[in-house]
Every structure is written in C-alpha cells, then in structure tokens.
Length: 370
Image (tube, rainbow, N blue to C red):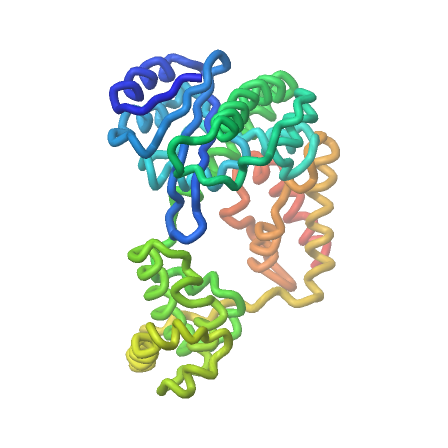
C-alpha cells in the first residue's frame, strides 16, 4: 500500500497512472446528514500496488482530473453511480472510459446487480470482510481494519476486471464501455432546480395551475438543500410538497393540517412556504407548466410484456442477463409515442447497440399488437 497525502505525491503518481492501460477505483465516503457526499478516502490500484489517497489533505485535484479524462486509461469500478457523484463534487471530473464490473457480470449472465463481495467470491473464491462498510471514514487515524478493507476492495477489483475481460468477447467488452459512457452522460446532466417538480410522486394528478405552485416549492427546496448542505427531506418531505401544491393553504392553521407537516418545518419554514404558495398562485396562465402525462392504463401491461419478450429472446441468444436488455422506463417511453393505435417511434433513450439490434423488432411487435 502507498499512502498519498500531499499534492506533490498525487501529481507524481498521476504521471505514472497516465501510462497504464487501466486503473481500478473506489471511494469511501459519508452521506448521512448532508446533501453532498463527503469523501473520506480514494483508492486506486494498478494490480501491483494499492494507493490510498487522503482527500482531507489534498487541495489540487487537477492531475487526477487529467487521468480521469485520459481516454487511453480504462477506469474500472463496481456499481459506481455513487462514486461518480463523489468524483464530481470532489474532483470536478468523471472517469472515462468507464468499465463497471457489475454491468460486465450481467453481460456474462453471471447475475444482475450483483454485489461486489458476491462477485469476488464467485470469480476469485475470496470471501471479503464486510464489517467496515458503514464505519466513520472521516475519522483520523483510520483503523487498521478500515485500511485493510479499503485496500482489499480495490486490489481485488483488478483481479475481477481481468477475469471478466478474459471472458468477454470484444463486442461485449465494447458494450460494457458503451453503457459506462451512457452512465457518465447521465451523471453529468444534473437537472436544474426548477425541473425537480417533474420527479415528485403523483405530480401527474395535479392541474397546470397546481403544477406551477409545485414547481416553485420544489425549486425552493432544491436550492435550500444545496445551500444548507442537508438532505432534501430535511427541508421538507416530497409528500408535503404535493399536498401544498394541491391544497394551497393561505394560513398557518391550514398549513399545520397538511400531510406529513412536521412541527419543526411549520415553525421554521411556515411563513416562507405560505409566501411561496401565495406568489405562485399569482402567476399568469402562460407561466403554468403543461399537464404531465398520466400513467399508462392497465391494458397496456399486456403490450409491455410482449415488448419485453423481444429483449428477453435476444438476451437468451446472446447469453446476457435479461434485466440488462431493456429497461421498463424505455419500453414505457416507446409505448407513449403512439399508444394505443400507433404509429410509434423509437424514443431517444433507446441508444447504441440496443437501438441497432432491437429497434426494428420492437416496432414490428407494436405493429402486430395494434
């Protein structure tokens, strides 16, 4: 193991990492009472040495950002969506090209969403300890068990990558990297604060005027969560946002009766919430959002199942985990383009090899169903 605790040490190692074909990456972080994850440790392994980077002591991350952007160095991670957020906040760059070993296991039909310890056990017959997963990674010094846990995770990730790469065909390897690029694109596209209202559960039940109120409330909550660095629900629960937009109270008595209205929120934010509702109610009609599409009717379930069989058949032929083939969200987007009688068009979310190999078959399946 090699500890990196100064900017100069990190810059020197980055010169070396830039010469490699791949590096394995992992992070340990804390995210309990904050909006943003707080990095406690970064681990990088090249197969010969595991480097432990102390983010509490590093100020200049540009050399590592350059490694992340180096397209000649494959970055290997496992189930990395949370790690990507840590990298984005801490380093301001995302690791590309990205090879996710969890995704790769799916392409070999070893399992879908397989946990790291289980994958290590299956491929390497090594039983990793799990006791330090939830420990305090911001404490200093780290315990010997924490250091061992962190170092082993990344060291074995190199072996996992090499074992998977040997079994993957060149085509499937390219598909893993393609899925990694899609994940990186999604991770880089953080929605604007005024767009989070679209994700509120049951927002489709609200009328456009109510959606205008929901949008202003959701925007306020998002900005406050970021500014105060606390989880969104610490500001106000999503269910309460919906109730506010639906009922639009004008006084504290009505406000107190809303679903999930916590006394602390009422006390600290009540006047602000009433003010936001009041101002949002004054918005002219041309400032209201369009109504959201309703969920597909229950009758569409049969068509969705038929579409899913198209992906399942190809997955069986290619020996790929069926869950990797077609996400339900993509099939629903496809169905929405023309349900119930068509014509249909492929949604933009169906990309890459899936669009190439499955697009025509999906449209033909819908034509037969119409």
